Length: 110
Picture 1 (tube, helix red, strand yellow):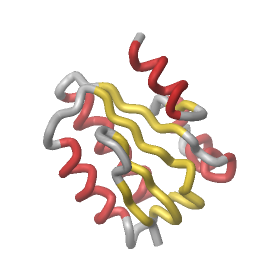
Picture 2 (tube, helix red, strand yellow):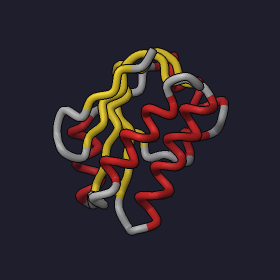
Picture 3 (spheres, rainbow, N blue to C red):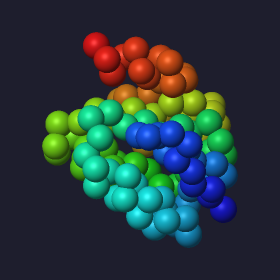
Picture 4 (cartoon, rainbow, N blue to C red):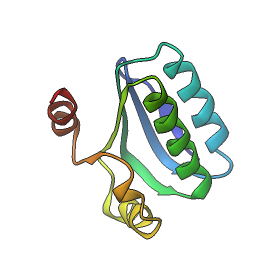
């Protein structure tokens, strides 16, 4: 089961498994946070132990929403086991992925 937190503005922290059961909760939280149309938005994936196709679809939808209004979107802190899922789906070429928040901050300020 996933835990969803927003520890600071424009960051969503996910923990646990992001799967078919939890994706609707993540999607709703993202809709609320993105309603303000933040210019930069990050998802901290450091606590995610597993993500399935519905979780990936939720992240894609969020990225598309942000790009539609000209914002920037990044993921950071993805564990190696979870990163393999992104690689298999070739989404490591779609998302902007960084090792940590400072690296994401630097890249999105450029």
